[in-house]
Amino acid sequence: MKIFLKYIPIICILIFALSCKKKTTIIDSDPLDDISEIPEIELLEVSPLSVLQYEDSISFKIKYLDGNGDLGEQDPDIKSIFLIDNRAPNDLIFDFHLSPRAPLDSEIAIQGELDVVLNNTILIDDGLGAETATFSIYIVDRAGNQSNILQSPEITINP
Image (tube, rainbow, N blue to C red; front, side, top):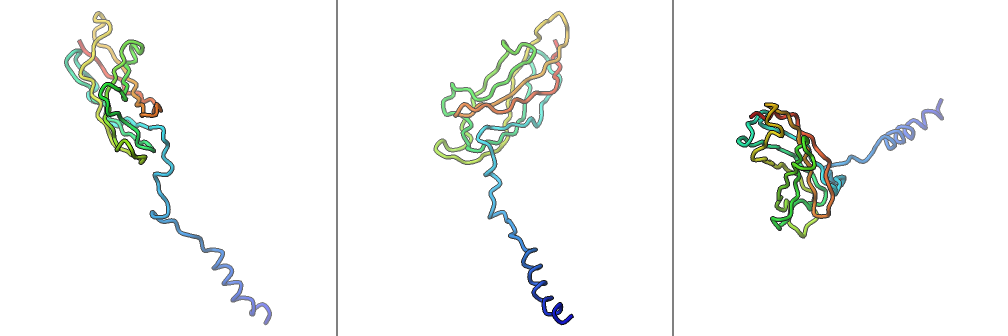
């Protein structure tokens, strides 16, 4: 029994030492380290969901995340945002310029929101009355990496 009592403090110290582990703090870990250099987007909102052809605008609010900040171009003729009307995906493709989201000579993780506005849309077949449409949206960074493709909810287009 005396031998057992002699080892109790050593056993307690071993249990205490083995149960300790380093606590990770915000300073120790950078949550932006795991962000991909391929842009990611998320559809936050589409409005309105019912429009008049030729008259009403449709706004697509998207959230973006990019690991190296190479979204957008200085040259206004280079397009980075693509919006496709899925009723005629080969014919109704709208492209938009995106100005740089970070300084051109930096490699920093960035995130933010964009409002992409389609000024108006049309009916493909006027004889049918109202039509429903969905839109696909993606962005391309300066390295040519294409983001994931989002699909909008159905939008009603009225004559």
